[in-house]
Length: 328
Ligand code: NAD
Ligand code: UDP
Image (cartoon, rainbow, N blue to C red; front, side, top):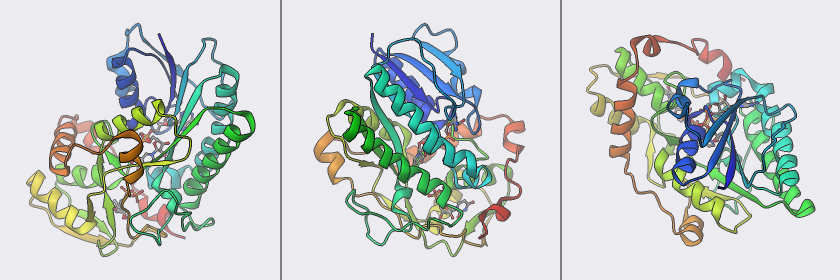
């Protein structure tokens, strides 16, 4: 039985990856310190003989007794408001945490895949974004803590590959959504759906002309699975190229949720990328992968999940002081 360590296991993507690898017949060790994750995301795996959970901060030395065949490194705050609130932990998990995991991969002779992001392209001057684009990142802006941690993560991963011969893979993930996102994590989909469910107006940042391209979680997990098992070392974009402005997107959510609320406008956060769309030519060619779930289907499944949450969860506010963190 192949063994895989998944960091960030209690988070949104990590928990779906645990499910997928268990389904594929792997023994999964999930690791998390719950800083932005939720125990509830893994409750259904309690008692599963092919799963164990280790509570651990990966910026500290990682000790695993068992052999490992694979490592998926997904631990990191991922929502802008999360990483603006815990900037030092974000830098540490991308740098020290990644260093620890690469050392572990070398020691265990395991293949490691690290979760990078479309944020390495910053506010992109090339559109849609191809893997060959080096990006346009403000190193000293508030988002720099995430973007630069992820860029460092890619650099140290390639160094471990080149210098130590570690088998590495890098996925550049574009905005992904679905059940188990934290309703209060501040990202646009939980934000809009939470507002609709609470009967609040939907907050559009800036004039809403900025674009994003949203990928459903099952498609993302399929792309990651295929990339891990491929023999391609350089970064690969995985995302859904179907691009939409945030203003149009808010209108879609209003229709889907049936809310009678309206949209209101707030300041655009500093360095918020104005456009984002993955070029997925490489993933199509290498992995024979492309997204299958359209936005209408994916949003419905996600809204059904948020509707099923308790009213206590619905009313929980992690980020009342949002604006404070988004300023220069
Ligand atoms: P998430 O916040 O739901 O999950 C991240 C998990 O990592 C959480 O459970 C958190 O507790 C854990 N974690 C953070 N620091 C840790 C530490 N020091 N030690 C142990 N665990 C730690 O976010 P997500 O959306 O599931 O993102 C997962 C990964 O995918 C991240 O690396 C993120 O950068 C990347 N990514 C996600 C998206 C997306 O759209 N969801 C886009 C680009 C990249
Ligand atoms: N956004 C918004 N209202 C919100 C939350 C986010 O208009 O309540 C915008 C945000 O400014 C960005 C886009 O939605 O342009 C996507 O934001 P998100 O935080 O989901 O992720 P990002 O792609 O910026 O990392």
